Length: 540
Image 1 (tube, rainbow, N blue to C red):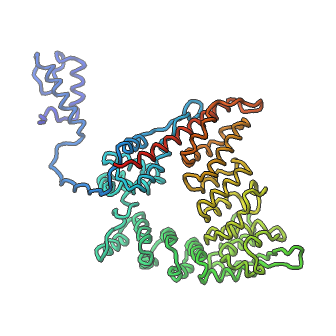
Image 2 (spheres, one colour):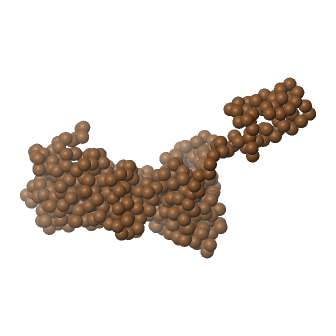
């Protein structure tokens, strides 16, 4: 639409508004003639100016059109699943009065599970959903891997057009940060990005390359290692956790001489995860001199003689000399030695005993907590399920519910070394014996959906707390986990818990109503999850 000189001034809109307020008889609109046609001219000018203002840009020469979006070869979502995705992405959960969550499901909390299922089924998203999907991934870093995998190649195409979505290029193999393909061309692009890219791009490139070519990633890192900043070396070194093997040992041994203490400590940690490394052997020799079996006692007991100094060799192998505030030097050094020693050291050192027998031995002079905590860290680092089982003990043991030689935080990490079924069984036994008050971080280690024994143990414990009139808000975290993790097939078992229970005399005021509301939300969410899974099973 042509725009005349009078319509191109900065204050044209204000002039039109003034004419409308005063009337065209008193104020003729810009570019119009006085008379009966002035009112129509005012409306025409206002319409043209509205278009110009909404466009927000002056007319200019046409730029080169963007390349077409790439094809996504995956099958499209079934219609019902596509509608569900829209509702999940547009949900804006709020709180009911008084801070109550209400009985409606929190749809955004179900989005990660929906994405995991959609990715497992190999579906492609509707193109119109991509902007909202990228916005969701931008706001929640925990969503990014699954969201970007589901969004596919068209998300990268969009990310190149919108700076708000540049994170997708940095995080996705095949984006600007991870040149794809094979041959000299891909290697050259990777080399150029490594030499010239931003720090975040280089980190993403190294992580992507490490996942598919561990040796190539290590060689790329070694090529510029001496010129990198200390803080960058630390981040780059962390990428070697993926695919760590004995082939990485020579590079990590060199890193033990790094001028940065944190880099040395990380290199030592990685080497100690390789039980046949030279560093592991050195740590085993040091730790063995600190721990012995006193057979003169009845029953025999472990005795500890912690190091009296932290020498240069210990520091080179990653032992931090200065302890945290409130921690004794000798116990600090001792814990680091035991943590880094291969767990195979201890049966040989302690008369051929099994891990269960070793953990059951008394420890003299108050060293049990320090020794067991170091063994816990070693079991987690070395992914040793046998030692993890010994240190976890029976879930029904009385000490499992409170402070002991192994804390609940340490137990949660130990559970991570076990298979999903064994993990769920142990936590179910723990809950049946000790209830839910201490189980939240243990539940977070269990696979989704929860195995049937674990799910039923959680529901039974919630029911006991409800009948006892317990303060319901203390269980809100567990209830939220149940909404996301309980098997949807358990919804039918919960129907009997939807009524407001009779409140005991000593119950928290209003607790019954809150419990009924929470169980209603749980049942509604489980049935919604079942519907979501069914929609994603349908043929597109």
